[in-house]
Image (cartoon, rainbow, N blue to C red; front, side):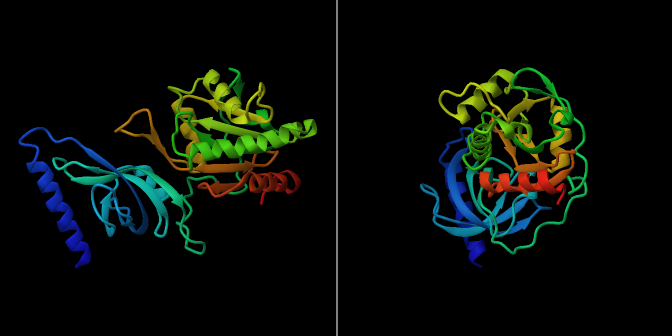
Length: 297
């Protein structure tokens, strides 16, 4: 009954908005919101969210929201805390929906993980070869890192979300700064950030991006490589590791994406997959140490 009343209340609000337009074409209204996922209906592409008060729009309540982006359904789980944009358009098929989903905190420990997708990288499997172009304009493949413990993550330079690419690059740069201090470690460890935005992330831009994260006065990336390739080449790698990404149709400068960081053994096998964003540089170094010393886990 509570859920029905909230939906009816929202419907009345939308009708009011539509009538106040005096026949003019309706425009979208956007509101920032925070909440916790209660249930997920992947087939219907809807999630029930217990959300906080949405300033200027509605009080805190629990209700169902359509979500159009496909990538979220591999990441969104009951119990996860999210932030999002509520889009309201009284003339659309769905008069309201969520966009620009960001997972602030994942579901509590102990909750069951979704079944493993066999199309995703499995522990002990060889990483398929790839050809990318690094920040210096040189071609690289998986063999370029042979003999080293390698960590791979995925980013794009224009990503605005502090808990997504910005955190991945901050963690990688922090670990790179640590490893770069010891010349002996440069032959044992490597970090690779792969961009999935080839239209914008040229090698030169990636070099500038990486040096910016390493800090003032940095002129060399050391153990950290940033690379980009064709969309088909990057998607092949992303699919192997279970990363999803797609251009945001409402703002084509932005890319909706999940998070994956992988640790690879010196002989090119998957040692560990770190989903989402909870890991720290210290934890990543620990995983890389284990991959270096004992092979796959």
